[in-house]
Image (cartoon, rainbow, N blue to C red; front, side):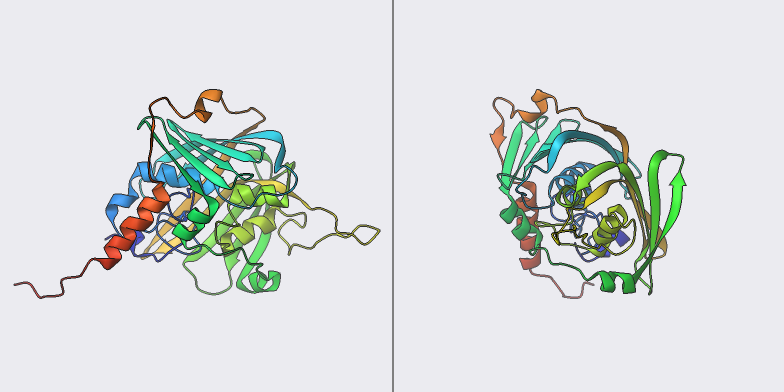
Length: 316
């Protein structure tokens, strides 16, 4: 088993994908894409793409107001550190739905129905899973509020200015105060795109059915009105809370130490538009078969592996 397989869980995630269970190439509780990697068969590029899509699509519960009152179309490039190959995802956010498309694969997260539809056009199959089912498969718990003081004690965050690659993005860097597998996280935020707190959490994957992590909290802090400082709820003149607006995280780079090597996980937005998804990517193909959701399949296989007896007899 390689170094990635020795990391003990989280991803979904997600995406980079949620992806099938939690979100990280090497399974860790706070990683982006924490999918268990006890067996090499689960580390293929196709599963990585599925994970990426689910990670992007699963994040927070449905809010009273639409998450995305105006259509938002993001083109993402997500680097797979295990292969060095990028995955390009077209992400369409509108109303209370997020549609993520990569090649012949579509994942539709509906925050009003609290369910995810996964369409594999190449394989002529599809699956449907509820947020609760996905949370159970991932071992997620209801989101809990992390103390701003606790995060500040564990990490130091500073502004590192703007970069030429993204003209409107302000960049922040966070480093742990003590020795940690996570060595550094860099976040680029485009403050010209304004999001509600719920919408921002959807895009970074920080709420139910995902578990919150230090990494997602640091990204939210960078995107917050305080720009890297502790998040503080503003008050109106009448004493009521003023809804906060957040910037759009356009680049996230996490550097981990795995054994003696440094592993960089990078997720960046390369284009921002307002297009709606093409109708054909939303439709389940004629003749497509209903299949077991990947997260449930992965959970079942991992449980079977755990239950399989281990032969400890010494071999000649």
